[in-house]
Image (cartoon, rainbow, N blue to C red):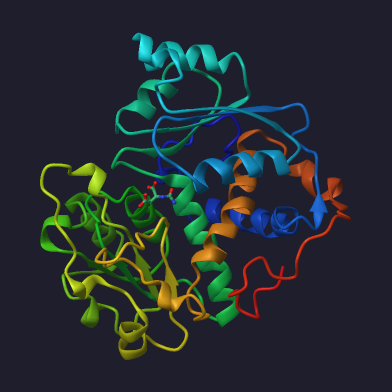
Length: 345
Ligand code: NCD
């Protein structure tokens, strides 16, 4: 299947072959993402980034990925500064913006929004999060992270135990991730959440139908045992304003819990942002210097993954290899002071 010209609205679009092709390309692009090499395959192309909901890493990493490919970016954030505040429909906005660019990345608080938008333009649209629906590019970078972490650990993807923890009802990243995980073989997927915030039934059924072992639990201390991957998520309080369901202390993934129940080579992930306020019971900062914590390797992986996707959607993949040049500007050996020694730039 070719991704050229396609809208990327759901992670459903990617089967195992497509994922492996994207990872090979993303591996090739890691030195470009890290500022060691340069490519200009998208020179002259314009990306429009429309974020009608809060974002830090998705917007900046999509924009950075497009810029690293040599393209240019135009962007708007919030609805207050666009004509949507004057009553313009998303369909009209889509048709207009499509005339200004070659690819659109959009985030919006409503699930239906991305479909209405993409239906009104032939310019490829990439879903950067539609309410509590999906977040396919996050799931791609999460899978790319697993590909790289398992490669380093000498493990294969098949047969692993994956624990998804937290607000699995409203967390769009885990919805898209479930669909991609099911493309592999013989996984045990433990969905660990307070009962009110469980993974939607159709996603549990999809995983079971594709031959995976599915466990549903509200006890992180038990479900995390022997997990190859712990994927924590934030309570999405903005999606259930009227009755917040606080995590109990049991959901706090901190050093004490990890030391007690996780294996020495577990991979600990989170789409971020993590809620670091006291009492939030999210992934704790006392794990920052633990090399099992892969969250910043994960954010770094967002750049090559999104570069691979944009290059595929705009049909320039075959030009990349011959276009690579060495970069000469300064970069530190480690991006973060807590970066694990195996993770050199
Ligand atoms: C997530 C999102 O926006 O869905 N963030 C992200 O894009 N990495 C997760 C979240 O907000 O909790």
